[in-house]
Image (cartoon, rainbow, N blue to C red; front, side, top):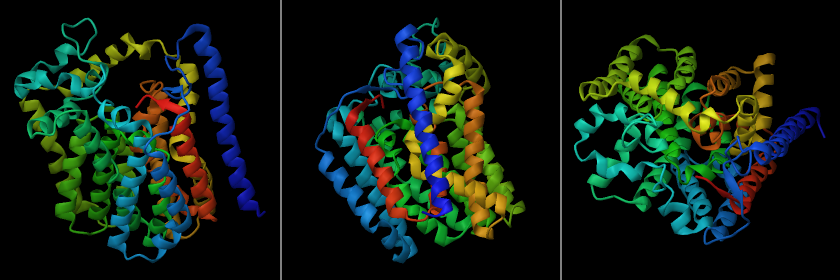
Length: 438
């Protein structure tokens, strides 16, 4: 066993120890006083070994990607590779979701009492609802919004309102939307890695973006959809700053970054990743004008329609502390949240992050350093979210947009099939042993 592999395994073992410690101490705390508000710490889940209609497909997809993923990714032409990544990701995510069956795995996920679809009928007059949106955030306000509606800007709920308006109403269509759009995030990451680093590293990362344990929560939670929108904002920015039609791609990036800010307050931290992309770009000046113009569209439209982002965010902070956020102990979650992240990105990503750190220290080849900087930009954004205290628990879902950008670190790994198998086993174990909350 060579030295690098020993260090990789040590990093993975340390990550396992973190998860086990979070599980053991979390169980003690939850049983003692119930303040964690999760039944299977550090995850929002319940113990429930089961199989379902998606099990055979999930096993087949995992086996195929482990056996053939690296070689196929190395030899396919670029555009077919992007389509193959999306298709395989769709198959993996759908099969994992259907382990719980169509009803529990897809149809009812976004219809529970705290979810977006519960308030569709309150958006009959969208401008009027937006003007009064902030007045329903606090728990003591009349007809207060459910937790997820109150906890996000109205762009999140409006997505499902508009789907309903075009005849795609109900939990089944909402879940299908989140899976279909959410799985395109992997394609966006590959596009960005190729533009900012090189194609070889993007190809090495592709199978890991397919078999990410995060797929358990992409299928289906709205955060999978949010992750894809943010990912494409970064991808278009990567194209813009590397000279690929900087006007159009800069504008598209700005539009998506603006929309991202109205999907989730926390995704404003994508400014950190955007800053890294700008740093790595060779054509930064011209895209900035188009980026700024695009970014302003969503804030102007929502403000004109009567929604005040800053007022709503201030009220959300109060609402957060009125609910579970005010009970959950910061001292536990500040280190247990990273344990959740280990579960969604897998041990392969942990080992890849170790290698990315070594790449920066040793100043390896230019493309590898650039990829390492992109990955660590996402890690910094995650750490800021963690320290803020506004992400206590449920980060296996909430941090999906950031976790997606940690996965390319797997491009640094040697022996990819072994690590891919570890990723797949983790996802399959979580999905078959636990009844996840999302």
